Length: 320
Image: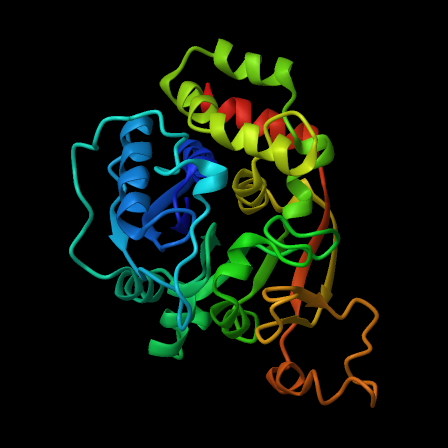
């Protein structure tokens, strides 16, 4: 069995990713740690607990940071609805979150099972806090699959940035400069062939399970918002693409390893994931701007392309 820790700002696409992990026969989800992002911390925890309930899982849920490191919290209600689940009035979950803080839980669980897989589906605030609190945390993580960034296309919240990185760019910078073995799954992988068309959505509903109904129905607002944003029809699920990579790295069909820097100063490009794809950070004209990243000396594995049919088959199996 592989052990997963999932850090989430649970809204509609997070829920689908969580269902995928809970359905994997060779994965034990040790915990869901919640961070403020798409919705408030309390709402994210409620959604995580409800998702576990639908899946028939008793996975513990821990409350983490209720705001970014130094900025005010900016939610994504416009995309996911005020409750993150398309405002469909789901009932309250039957159990509540654990009393231990999410950052303490992350550190404790990683130390107890070195080599586990950490999957981040929201802003990286909890992870940055864990790194600051425990210098050994990064060394206890075998894989760190990050849903975040826009390395190959426009952003989904600004022209330059993807939401998870944009919300707390200071946390993202700290994480990308750490020794965590990051595998970056950007927003671009949830577009194009990865988008579920109407027929594929109907196939999911035809499975007739509570998991399938939740996956489709809680994303109703997100589906509309994606069309408003891109002009493209269908169900685009960013977090499940990252979870697919966490479950089977070979679903990522093209990878390369580079320095990645996070922009924190500019309002125009705040949260931009700047990828040194041509290895020019060492050049004299760039060295000053990249000095801190170069000093950290860490590179990120970036997934550029994705096996969409394999992902969709995995999704159907998980929801069946």
